[in-house]
Amino acid sequence: MRYWLFKSEPEKWSFDQQKQAGAKGQEWDGVRNYQARNFMREMAVGDRGFFYHSNEGKAVVGIVEVVAEAHPDSTAPDGKWECVDIKAVMDVPNPVTLDAAKAEPALKDMVLVNNSRLSVQPVTEAEFARVCEMGGLDPAKAAKG
Picture 1 (tube, one colour):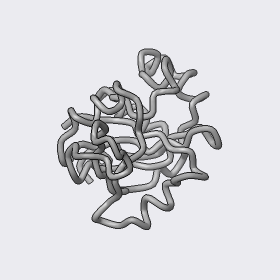
Picture 2 (cartoon, rainbow, N blue to C red):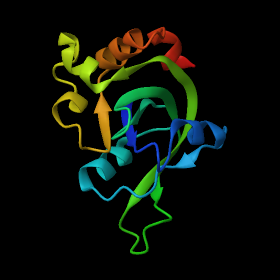
Picture 3 (cartoon, one colour):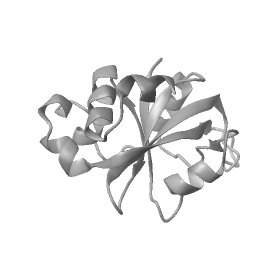
Picture 4 (cartoon, one colour):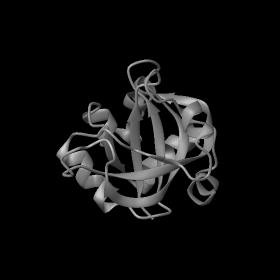
């Protein structure tokens, strides 16, 4: 299993909306960055990730799971963009802010800390565990559901 971080502006698509999408999940559409698209191409069903509210809040607020591998993005008329589908798994009881992540020495190499603009990014297993701990989650339960 690999770990990821998905960023969304809560006024456009929030974690509450992600939860309302239910078990079938939601297409993570609209990504128009080649690096982010390529990361989605690497994802497998069952991979876990963080749902991060950008702009407003700037915090990891939930855990999500990939439920469909990369496929054509339905919002891309030219067909060159792809996306995955994700579903909400659980809330992060104590949202982990960007400032808190930047202040945590164990996260100094995390992509979020060094390139907070990338909308889809990889997270190492150690980073996943540390952010879960900071957010009040048991990393093993967050990783397995």
